[in-house]
Length: 271
Image 1 (cartoon, rainbow, N blue to C red):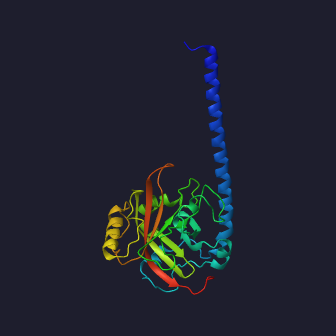
Image 2: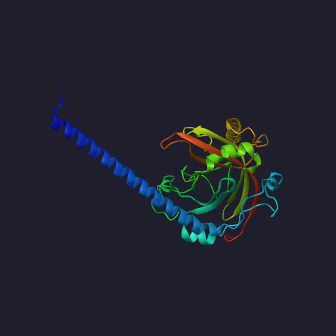
């Protein structure tokens, strides 16, 4: 039988461990809320630099090819001011149907913006960033953007809502992406949950066989059958958004692929 002093020792040991864990959890929660407030302030400050109204008319972009007219819902952005705040800025992403409206950054290190905000300060919320392997000046087959799946819907936290929205309104999957040299409009052609080991969906091959495999892959994996993607081809240009899908530590990834449907060249950083 365990003697009373030993029982007391065990009791206080368990209590001490619990208090340490509670303190750690409380600190982490307070830190997260602080990071969230800081992120909200940054977003409020920078969103004045993207000038096009929301939402976008999906119908107008469905019939216009790449290189269409200026009547398209392009997104003018003041990059001069953005670049003064952060020289890593390479574009601006807007998905009106899920409230994503944010400048995109890029470095040679895909780990940096996983835990740093737009001002390069440590933040558990991170920031939305372009893959280091994506050429944001001269788009090739597949341009990839990453962002955390956050409970407060910041970064790519609202991206999963597209799984429901596109079932009811398949033509609402319009994405605006503007860089200092191009204003582009994309239409979502595939969305699905995959695993982190699926390297094809975030790849960027240049040879025709790879392009054919990529298009076949995203067409077959698509989970929203209401999306019409029978016209996508290996010669098209695609934008891919990737975020975690599930609880922390999950290996599941939500993949969203969009086809370039309209583009306008710009000659200045202020448009």
